[in-house]
Image (cartoon, rainbow, N blue to C red):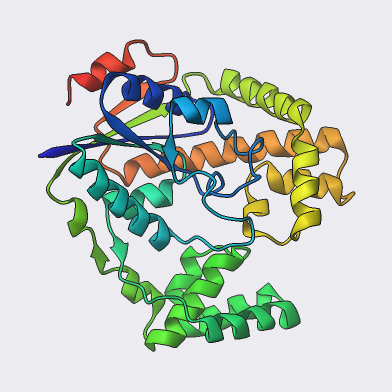
Length: 302
């Protein structure tokens, strides 16, 4: 069977470096699994590889959309399947790397066969959001599908809109449709999944703080200001960890030191959620961040 390698886990654990090492050893294709790096201009806050790095280690699914364009989990899976097919034709090893765990789950465990977006329904829902607010739409979701409302956060506008949209299109409950998943595209593959996790939580938090200081020094605040001024502060990608806290600072809601503290804490909480995903995925091996010889150990599975 043809192998597929997936490298996932919390941010700032060395996933990209490991993927690059594998790329140097095998004819392969690197596929980014990051819901923010897909957007042009979201560079510093997403820790996107720079242009020189991308020339040496080309990644699929980086800088493929403008910030105001929509990209769903289903879009990720469709594009990934096409990349897999092209990699097969060239006898290359597909290496998926990143930290957006829902993307990994859709690829490896399956994704519900949801209907295509309906522009008319979506426009009406977005008007309701602007007119009545998110609480109104969340209450509507509760009425349409109480089970979905239990698992979708009341502040997650994108998922609330999508769940209501699916209910209205199909006349069925979103939660019921999600229970029927499709993953036949990768059934005949040798799937090898590797996670990297922090070894020392206290040290990890210190490293996250230094990482955000470096991002600020590199121009994160100017990056967010430019995106906000060119598009809108309501972009879904500006709700990502780091960007949201920076936007709060630019809006005058918090001081710079609080912005830094909030960003570090939000990233740490995200890392804990990313680790809980490891229980949902059949992980081949979990590496500690500072563990040596990861590439050699992965080679033994190929």
